[in-house]
Length: 385
Image 1 (cartoon, rainbow, N blue to C red):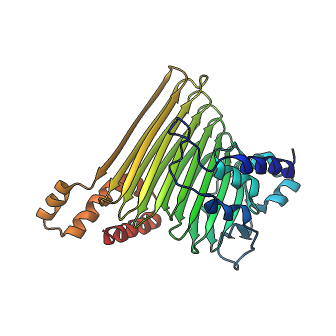
Image 2: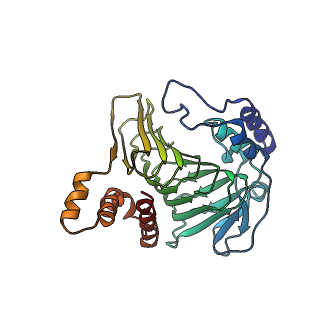
C-alpha cells in the first residue's frame, strides 16, 4: 500500500474509535478525561512552516525547519524519504492503540525522516529541538542502521496554549545501540499526545531517558517492541507536577524473541493539585524464552491535593522467564524532614534534599547540563508547596 492508501485506512479508524475506552484490563482503560472538544483541534491542524533557522535539527509546529548539514545522517521530509527509497510508507505506522493514536496516524499533516546509516559510530550527540506555539499533528520516522551507535537528544518545548500530537517510529537495526534522551516541556499545552514506538532488531540495545513537565492534559506512550533475539532495552523516566498538571504515562515492553532483557524505572514527583497515572506493561510472548524483564515505579506526593497511581501489568505466556515488578505511592516523609532539620537544614533545604535523593537514580546518569537543568525545576516544585 502507498502512503495515501494507508492514511485513508487510518482515518477510518480515527473516525470510528471511541474517545474513551472502558476495557477490563488496566493497561488500556482510560484514566484521562477527554471530550470531543479536546480532540477536535488535532483533526483540524494544518501545516504551518517554520519560524526561522536555528541550530542543529529544528522543527516548528511539526514542520522540519533546518536540515542536518553535512555528514552521512539524512534529514528529509516524509515525501522526500519515500520518493528516494530511504523508507517505505508502511514503516511510518504501527497498530492503533486508541483514539489519539489513530488520530495521529490518520490526520498528521507534516513530519520528517531521520536516517542514520549502517556502521555509524559518531560520538557526537544528534540534537533535535521541537518548538511550537499553535495546534499541530505530526508523525516522524527515525531509522538506525545495522552495526551503528548513536545518541539522540530531543527537546520538546511548546509555548502556546495549544493541542499537539506527535508520533514517532524508531527502528533500531541489528547489533546497533541507541541512547535516546527526550525532554518534554509542555506546561502550556491544553492537550498533548506523545507517542514513541521503538522496534528493536537482534542484538540491538536501547536506553531511553525521559523527563516530563506535563501540561493540562498530557498523554505519553512508549512502546518498545523487541522483535529480534538478544535485544536489551531500558526506560528511565521522571515527571514533575507543580500546579494542576495531569500526566497519563504508559511504558509498554513487548518481548517477541528469545534472550531479551528489559529494565523499566520511573519516578514521579507531584506537588500542588497535579495528578499522574503510570502504567507499566510487560508482555512476554510464548516463544520468547529466557527473557529477563523488570519494572519499578515510585510516586512521591508533596501535598494532600496531589494524586498519583502506579499500575503494573504483566502478561507472561511461558515459564522460562525472570520477571518482577514493584510500585509505591507515598507522601514525603516527615521523619526524614525532621531528621535533616535537626542537623541544621531549614525546611525548604530539607525538602529539596529528600526530593533530590528520591529522583537521583534517574537524574544523575544523565549528561551534567541536563541533570542540572532538571534539578533546578525541583526548586520550583518546592516553591509551589
